[in-house]
Amino acid sequence: PRRINSLEFHVVRIRY
Image (cartoon, rainbow, N blue to C red):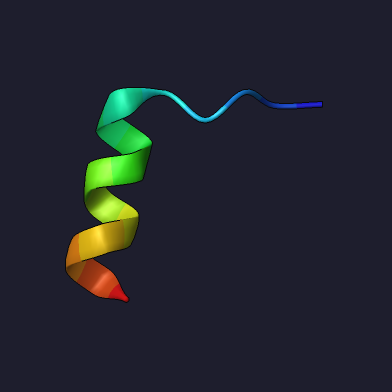
């Protein structure tokens, strides 16, 4: 499975 990296986490916070 994919691990949530900091960049993805940040994008998720922005979009959601």
